[in-house]
Length: 289
Image 1 (cartoon, rainbow, N blue to C red):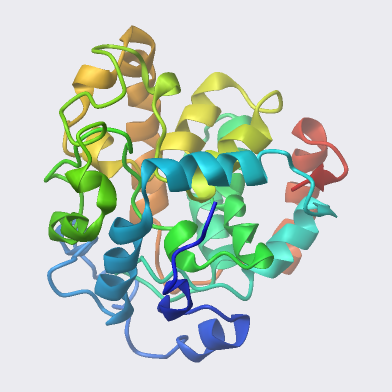
Image 2 (tube, rainbow, N blue to C red):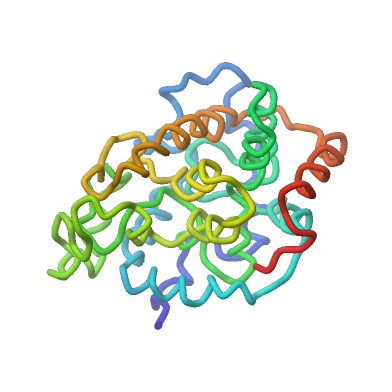
């Protein structure tokens, strides 16, 4: 598979660049931001967001996704502990997020700690910590538009409920009769398990965690960025009863992922022993990425 020729024009493509985007004063005081102010793509806090989605929507084609799955789901790139992977996320700021510029480790801790504070099961807490760990794909040279951001089905017509739908005009699949109809290559009610989603950390981490976490956790990980489905109510025609039953878990997880974002930083040194025990309970000592 040939990578897009202008992939080097991704908003950020080097670790050093990510650190340059961490600036003070761009996020509201803790507790002062209204829910309606989150995911403000009309006026995002950073000018990288629109450029991110322009590239994402242009290059996330059916063939691109299938090729990335063949390449990465062999899990033969690197073997690491969870803590080594978390250390990498400490250098990463997500270009697709219009809300906040904290590094990803802090976002994971905020999410998992909010879940724990509400007294949920320990596997749910661990899901909060692990849900974005697939962003380690950036370690392997992937540009952010192929790692983060909202996800959506490929192989069928792109919905107007996806953020910045106008950018799909430059996607080759938009003019391909195999892929630009309502069902495309799929059948009515085939189930999301039969649908290829745009490639990124969600799909990657789902496959990585299969066999380690319960089914509701896997749904949270795989579809937490599929906002066109769990927030806008779109794509139900591709779903089966299993998807509809587990949609409640994705919706249950979403507020922790979204509204726990605040600049009050959890103390990783104090929290680390708790999470070390939790990781050891569910996951192997090292993971092949």
